[in-house]
Length: 225
Image (cartoon, rainbow, N blue to C red):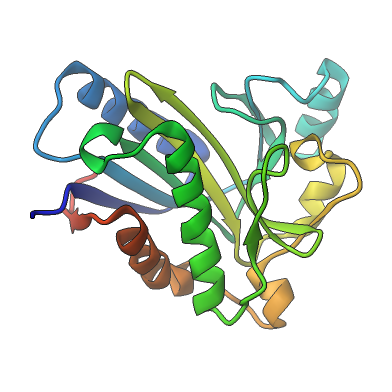
């Protein structure tokens, strides 16, 4: 049986707005008329600091002004979850997928994203990574979150996804309560392995984990479309 095909699009280090714009184009395409592909796997490393909030908010107007004064963007999004941070040294993965050819529902899609991040941590030499149930959705090493997950799904098509800390400057997280979880911390691959781990280093292993978990074939082209 042929596996579903997913287009791989690696944007490199780009402004967060560029990722959102490409995500919107793929959303319109898949929701208008299903094509031969199950969708696209959009990957990038944010070029600058961005705080995002989900459908439940997470920041007051005063907090938003304070974060912008630090030199960061603040963007409200239509994903699940509360406030989090995106920036250089972080792998952003936005799978824009029609779940039907993949045989998934929203809950199993979220579980699959968690499984990808757990597998990547294992391949990097961190066997202690674990997914936890809501409200702790994401991937954790002990009480410190290494990967945040927030998704949206409409008409069977997903958007947004995961943010995995590779060599992220974790001090940016000190200005918010990440995902609204008081008393928990954040970490990164570099912090845990005590060496510099770049986004470029982890991408091949992440793609391996994605193909295994989603049971799909990845194809890539020069143009992100």
